[in-house]
Image (tube, rainbow, N blue to C red; front, side):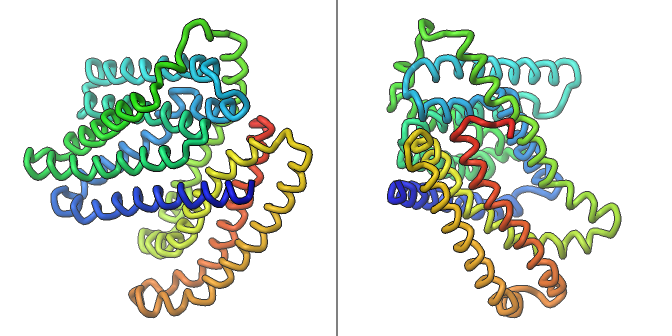
Length: 347
């Protein structure tokens, strides 16, 4: 199981790093062809989507993944898909309402983008739940690669701005999702004969407590900036942003392990030696993380001296505390994997 966990972590890390690098390389492109307002609006729509899309589907992607670990059958996928399709219909309905009643700009493209992202919340848990981590990695990397290509085409050649970026993003999700869905023959998992109200209720009860948790994570990601700007100023927020970058990177990198760990924890939960594995890996993670963070802290002054402008040197004062926060965040992800394995989402 440890070898499997390490293998899956490496696979997910390679794919996720590739995806994030492609997204990073688009930033200079955005700054050239978009003004501050346009890029800010696009970023706001995308950030809002990470909260709206999973909530509309009742976080059934989390439920589908966990239940597929125990039973890789069409029953789990069919019943979760019914809720997710309902969520996709709600997105379309709200999009139409926002256009015809409130006349919100880019309503069509926002609705199309959120609808397309919902497809990823269907494909990803199926691939993870089936243990197809290589295909899971290729799926997300392919979306990013196609997104880069389509973004350049619609912005440079068709002179589209925010609407073009949303269209490119939606198209990338739809095209790759259809290709992967066809490859795994997703229709073979769907059958109305598997429909069971009791199963839907069980899966909804699992995912329902996760919704406040998802909302809380979004609030936490922006609350600190709001507080700093309210009580101090934008200069202090800039110092904090620099200090927080490294701590955020730690959380992102550990997140690769967290995705693989959820699957491993659920696979072994019913075995006799599951507690031994949990304890062993917890203390390994505990000491390994502490060692890495202490090592990084020792080189922080050199990183700032060679790569960071002197006006941001004050940020070094806050990095140790932010690292401590990142440390406990990573441990919480580990313990959360065990709770997921036991289907205890309320705790």
